[in-house]
Length: 235
Length: 336
Image (cartoon, rainbow over all chains, first blue to last red; front, side, top):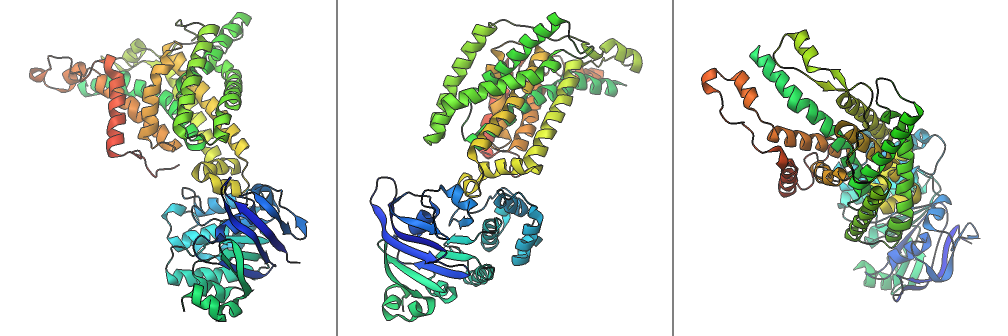
């Protein structure tokens, strides 16, 4: 039984067709799981379903053995599930520090300690703490987004394409940060386009095709699987 | 000496009135910009909501006067403001619950909400007409002047008098207090930051656990304070004519847009830009030039660019010019 688990999820947007059908994804604490697949495979949809941003037609989402399928996204956040969307994942008009403070909105204790921890994890944020986030570079902005999501000290962190639109150097740096987050005993699920790099830092991976699990396995295994390589890794 | 006279003349007829009028516009403009930033629609009921709040203050002033309650040299209306604010907020929250919330939950486009606010405007006008009628009312009592023209002339020995009406001083002082508290709240408190976050990126705010209902309610509470205070200050200064507030919406919207709609600090400065624009352009400078120019160059005409009847044309022109050249406002990126 994994710590956070979406089992046999079927869901779509509104009354439209099902985007994912009977799709299962699970993750344990201290583990990075990558969701891969071609465009339109339902990767982000699977993640949004696990967060509760769209309603499940069937299947369930379990956290620590409890069924949380009926909870709203806000209530799931309160349970310790944090989400970093692909776009618009920061408050551009607020300063770095304010972004972090809003991330800690649900915390009643002293946020300064948590903010210091985030600064230790992302030193650049400490340097820029009074700057407006809209003025930061793409990579720095992604770090703000990660930092904001970490402010509630989540047990599950979901990342929707964290490296979309950043340069290869920044991508490596971001992946290093994600590994550091994993080492704090957080369960991480991420959707990624850069499949090869994502698998190389992931413990396990899922390959979705047309909303269903096609392959799954350890990151290294998937990287070496000839069929996965041929169809998704372009080698 | 002539130079000093010229300065006093300008101070008396343009700068002090513009600061007063600007403060009144600024409060309305922050109201517009706040509703636009958080609830995402242009509230055409702004003027009449201000009128509603003022109406409550006027009625309470008459009631307090009948009880013999007053503030001595200060206008009784100041005492009624807190009660008027409460009534205003209740009215706004009722309207929000029965009208705006339906469209908000349906995620209607902003244009539809703006049209809905036009409906709210008509209803509010009707309510005001039923309760207090359309007539002009003075509700200023207490000391009318802080400095009279004659006293100033005696004191300074100048030809020009400087008048400072108590309403002018009250307007400026009260505006500074209200606006400072509001900016402190928006920028320095956790709740204020959550409001700005909600206005900046609604989805992410929800994912951070911010309660949208609380943000909406707080927005109306702040809007109620701004509308009532702005309305009462304007009414004290000029007398309460219920439907003048509708006309004031043009300079108020102009101020909000000049400041960059959605930016409260911009709206605050925008109020003064529009007020100074209106007054500087419609003031007759003949006397001013008589003081500073040699006799041979004295102007024959009034030296007035536009008649005061056209003051709204000035705010409209400012609005159009800003929309053409700096559509995101002239104070873009400026913050407190």
